[in-house]
Amino acid sequence: MKKYAIVLAAGKGTRMRCNKPDVSKVSFPLLGRPMIEWVYRAMHNVFFDETVTVLGYGGEALSHLAESYGKIAWQKEARGTGNAALEAANLLEKEEGITVVLSGDTPLLIDKTLLALISSHLTHHNDLTVLTAIVQNPQNYGRIVKEGSMIKSIVAQKDCSVELEAIHEVNTGVYVFSNRELFAHLEPLREKTEAHLTEAIEMMILEGLKVAAFPAGNNEEALSVNDRYQLSVANKALQRRINREWMLQGVTFEDPDTAYIGANVHLGRDTVIKPNVHIVGESCIGMDNVIGPDTYLDNVTIGQRNHIYYAHLTDTIVDNDADLGPYVRTRKGAHIHNKAHIGCFNELKNADFGEGSKCAHLSYLGDATIGKGVNVGCGTIIANYDGVNKFHSDIDDNVFLGSGTTIISPVHVGKDAFIAAGSTINKDIPETDMAIARARQENKAGYAKVLKEKALAKKKK
Image (cartoon, rainbow, N blue to C red; front, side, top):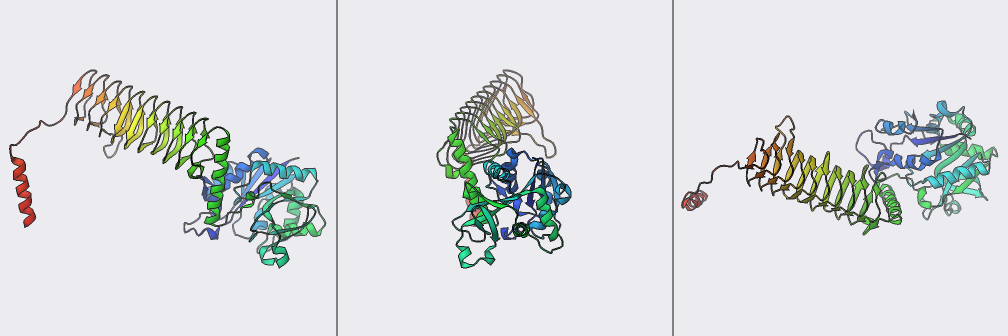
């Protein structure tokens, strides 16, 4: 049987209190990814024949993501969930099979639950199956009134009697419909100013169609994100879920509550994640590393047995057995090779840093290839920018850069060369040469006293 999906993502999300124009609720990030992407992830293993995402307010920002999962329909005016689902009619109403309707603001849904929901629907030959959940505080959720597993009514919070308010089984907003029944019961709602999916469901119940409830195994999946507090609750739930899975696979988290691991991150066994670590983007961390504390990694590839702490690394490759930190920043194409050491307050940009090379403190290395066994002295600057263009320098193996060296790119420093401390280098240095480029020192006897007297006299005026 063919399977289709409609993802409702047209809502503005007024309760998010966002002042930015054209930002929809489902575009708010959770662990670095848009909220709606977590719904798509739950759908990934279901293998739908077609997915239609209904976009509306702020949808342009999400259109590229939605197109990567299927087709797009547009709800130009906010007229309720029923009207939003109707926007998919031109694409799906003639199809045979089942259609799963999901909300883009339910990011805690998981694939196992979705597969079990579909299986139950098909096994029991239902016309509609509603994913429900038992929640401790059902406030603001539609209550499920049923006999056995069959639903007799879905009652909105505002319409609940005292008796109905005591019901803790609620509607999650995730449904499996017979496709033809879905659009047949939405069609009478087309001309309404505001139409909701629950109205179509009530029609199906009144007609005696088979409408059943399927309780979710994990009730947190019912969470619908409508404000920034609920966004934080969802973020924390996803954090716990991801960290738990990595711990079960052999990764150590010293403080799971302060470690945030993105959905597209891979962690190797025996790696230790210390407190206050964020790893996001398309990052791959190998085995037996120590990451953190207080470290941010984005789009990085890390090998094995590295120690990276108090660091901020983006778009970077680190090979094996390197030692980085504290207070290291790398960005845009940095590559740090085996057994390298980069210490306090250093920044690398588009720099290839060779095997066994050392940069202990207070340096900037931009647009450079640095060979093996290079010593970068304290305060070294590779000046790569003339205000318009960037230039590249090459520093060969076993070069010694004295403290306070400034290299004005483009420069080539040959193998085994030595640069004296305090030098400003703007010419190539051949192999094994020593370069000194600084003014000759001159001492003026007793003149420090004269300068001090002049300064004091000026202060008195």
